[in-house]
Amino acid sequence: MAALNIERAEFLKQEDILIFEDSVAKFLDEHAPESRVAKWREAGIVERSKWREAGAAGLLCLSIPEAYGGAGGDFRHEVVLMEQTARKGVSGFLTSLHNAIVAPYILHYGSEDQKKRWLPKMASGEFVGAIAMSEPGAGSDLQGIRTAAKLDGNQYVINGQKIFISNGQLADLVIVVVKTDPSQGAKGVSLIVVETNEAEGFHRGRNLDKIGMDAQDTSELFFDNVRVPTSNLLGRQEGMGFVQLMQQLPQERLTIGVTGVAIMERALELTIAYVKEREAFGRRLIDFQNTQFRLAECKTEATVARVFIDRLIGLHLEGKLDAATTSMAKYWVSDLENRIVDTCLQLFGGYGYMNEYPIARMFRDSRAQRIYGGANEIMKVLIARTL
Ligand SMILES: Cc1cc2nc3c(=O)[nH]c(=O)nc-3n(C[C@H](O)[C@H](O)[C@H](O)COP(=O)(O)OP(=O)(O)OC[C@H]3O[C@@H](n4cnc5c(N)ncnc54)[C@H](O)[C@@H]3O)c2cc1C
View 1 (tube, rainbow, N blue to C red):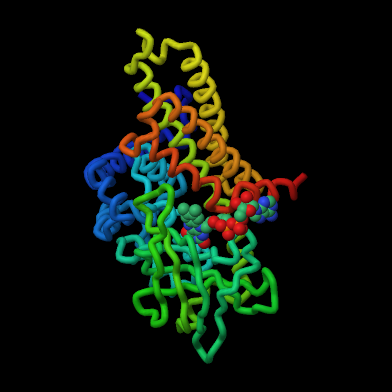
View 2: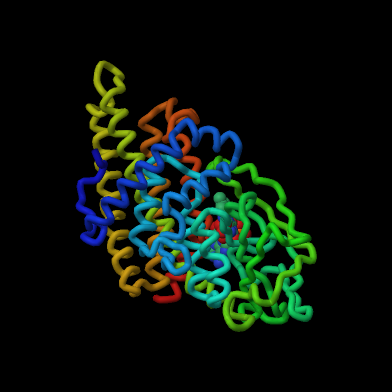
């Protein structure tokens, strides 16, 4: 039984979407059961073959046109995949980053040649995608990045270092945010694609030891005189990277909101089931008014978040979603997600603190949602600009 009674938006209830949802659920049950996900958590990485399997099942590049090997769907399909992945606790298998963040940069800014070269491989799972913005010295303030790409004939020579890069150990294709003109701020930033398997001088650093998202290979990346053809620049001219990021980050932020609400729902479902079973002082935990009130509050807030996010998905499908509103979704939903998961964990008592309980892992995983995609404070800076 779903934890929230609120009806989903009409556009998410259409028959083809419900059929797709069913097929995603079946795929995850078969290919990512809890026992398998536990192995990924131990290894700190999802096995490569899973990407091929997701590709073969048509789950990669969902909103990329069929002409480029994609599924020809739209953002609704991405929403379904993200929600099912979150609802089933498959944290770490970042198809959402590959599909809804990396592939769209190539679709929107890539030349016809680039799209034909990279998107079919991303759709089949032959290539895993990543985007490398953050550096040891610059995360929130992307204008301060130091990774530089210097023109040398018909090649760029890239030098620098990136950190916290999701899919970093697996990635075959990395969109690297570089300075093509270090004398400029935002206007000196460009996006260049590096095919890691061919790139001499490209090194992967540590698969970083995180407090959560254990199955995710979040990594350091090093570029030491990495040469790529100038044809790997995304967009027609240098210096467009910042604008491209500003145009694409809203979708990334919306995906964080979409996942956040799905996690709230899962936390509520698990907790409601638990408090109906567990007894203390001769009563079920649900029979204490404190339990009822806390969960009533969580359910109310999660319902408000669901309505808000569904509305934003609708606006995004119509091309009417602005950056400030997605910033609201990113910060407010991820903050709420953390509060709800924390409240739920408390109701599990000591068991809630044990990693073998999903609520414990959700607590650890959720924390990152307030940081990546732009720290929540940066979201408030963006919203404040519209005041
Ligand atoms: C699990 C995980 C996955 C990630 N995946 C990726 C990825 O795939 N690709 C990628 O490029 N990056 C990724 N990141 C990096 C992430 O985007 C950055 O950590 C984030 O943008 C913050 O940058 P920073 O860590 O350098 O923090 P800083 O910029 O040093 O900021 C630290 C804190 O200072 C505060 N702060 C900063 N600026 C302001 C301001 N103007 N006003 C008020 N407060 C401010 C905020 O509280 C902020 O959290 C990932 C991070 C994590 C944790």
